[in-house]
Image (cartoon, rainbow, N blue to C red; front, top):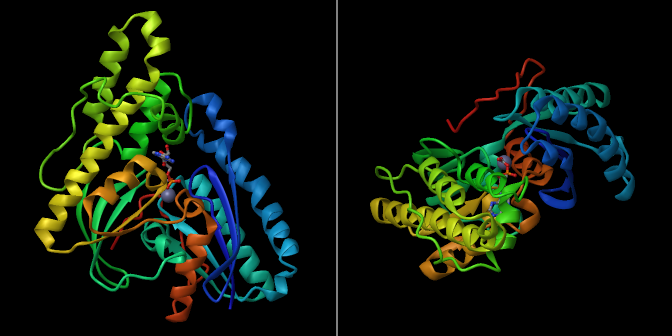
Length: 326
Ligand code: KG4
Ligand code: ZN
């Protein structure tokens, strides 16, 4: 079964082609244009998706020596995300589905992240814990069966990736912040600044206080230090942000007795996080780097599972910017 996977929920246009659940090709266009504004501008994002999605679909078919006639099903993100971005992918999927006469299925972006490690690695048996860390979400989810979720904790304010983005903007490293912070942190001393490690109630997360601590430190250092101590600030911030994730994971394992962890979403690309997971000495898995940020392959991968269970969507499906799990 050939599936076209489409992702346009935020500022990445993702188009992928899969055959029987195996990724043939995964194309991601990250919209750099937003970096000059320090964050995603929704209207610009949707214009870029409009320009790219058809072009990328044509390219991916051509490069894989396929035609639209070879597509058996279309999987598309229908939430959560920016409404005007979601609408581009969803309406494109509906139009294509109608014109070539194949079914389409709407995929929950968060669920697609949760299953994304298993594009590459053997699928876990249930139950397992999923740490979902992206620009829009930070949650620990107990996954007891296929699509059987219990959200054990979520962020009370900023998402983890969002805090990387905000701190990066604050210290002049630009957008997206995660990769920039990680790069500068490699040159810095992570013990240089004693930023707090956020640990609110139980399994909830909070990143706004940490961000404010960085803001105060940065505001109060001299102009010269502002230039030279950026790597130290980046490293110290990264250490606190990641320690918070690890504290919560340890607590979740203790509370549930589940010692199998899957980590996904944009922040799961972070090497410092992966090193900390390694040190935990438990069974853990994270996606291949290309499947950490938003991509069409993870949408197609979950879409394939849904099609196999007989799930498909009809044309009345609406984009849902606030879609969550269950
Ligand atoms: O999953 P994703 O592509 O989009 C959402 O669904 O939100 O995640 C994007 C987020 C951004 O906040 C970005 O700064 C963060 O993931 N990110 C990282 C790294 N790479 C991307 N954060 C920390 N370290 C990284 N290496
Ligand atoms: Zn995402």
